[in-house]
Length: 95
Image 1 (cartoon, rainbow, N blue to C red):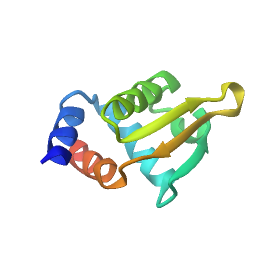
Image 2 (image 1 turned 90 degrees about the vertical axis):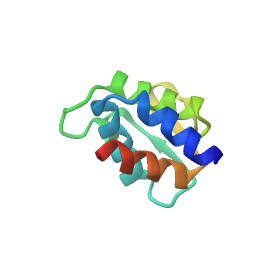
Image 3 (image 1 turned 30 degrees about the vertical axis):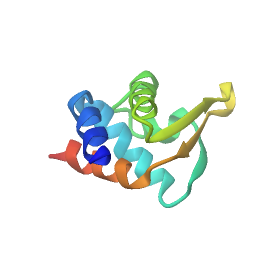
């Protein structure tokens, strides 16, 4: 029940461009639990901005799906706390 509530809360507050950032996050992270991500890894071909990606990250962090730590020029350290919820959010955002 808590997973559904978390997923629905995030999906209802995610913009389409933030959904793209979440898709890219899943593609980069894969099955890893922790990873250092730079802005260019998420931005890709320029459809989204760094600030859009960070907004998506903050919404996921508030929901308890990921944990982030900014490292300045080195990037952002992302720790996935609930991979199942992250994948479900990405699937619902695509709809």
